[in-house]
Picture 1 (cartoon, rainbow, N blue to C red):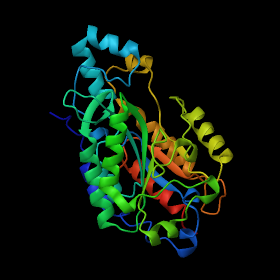
Picture 2 (cartoon, rainbow, N blue to C red):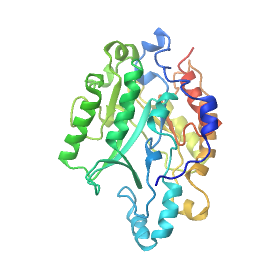
Picture 3 (cartoon, rainbow, N blue to C red):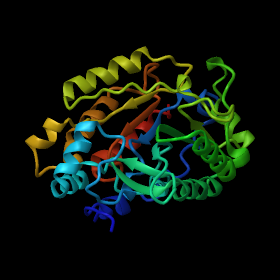
Picture 4 (tube, rainbow, N blue to C red):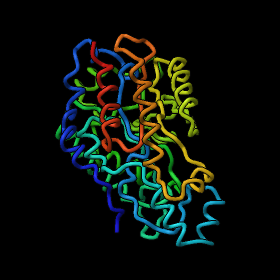
Length: 321
């Protein structure tokens, strides 16, 4: 049984449904002529966690101390994992229709059923289910470009990499954008749209020239729960980023074990609220003419509050003069 969602549907349905499903196709020719590293793109952190299934078993992506505690205290582990593993309430198709164009995907291989599945401590959908949703979107929105960032791949063998590579090729085929020869050749949005190249895959290993490696998309991790530190971190890293590369600004708080123990009745969504307020305020310091404006900005619980909706709108608006 999947975790019951909180009541966010009225906010999303009333404000955001399909509002930005074609925002890239609606940009001006001048903006489309820019390299995609110079666009501002909304994204989501741990994008596929809406599908996680509650369990008392800690995932292989967690520190050993968490795994050991889960074995000793399974009932408590299931309670806390359910509250602190989810970062999104909506599936990726819903996110894409609402304007998200960067997806943070983390997978684990060698599950009990032999499938490659989503992981963020808990285990979720198969990667095939996720790719089907993305495929549905790009087929219906042929001028939109999606960035799939496979941040972490746990327990992968050579065969698993080969299988996932073939799954990506089977799902997107000629829509896949090959890796540039150098950072100076990052494609423009108009080039991608004219060539029908809709999917950029960032892969943690150099398995094919179809997939971009991490050097083309730095994503520094703030690893904090401090509002002041996060704001300073985002500002400094964005200002110093290489404009010829994709760049991910992680607008997220990362709880430590002490954070969870201090607030046993809370959850990750509660922690994300002040974080999203910081990100929204930070975005308001930029204008479309600002040369230091962010490229990709990711947050938790997109579409789940007015603040999260404002973040998407603010990022997209940075592409308009």
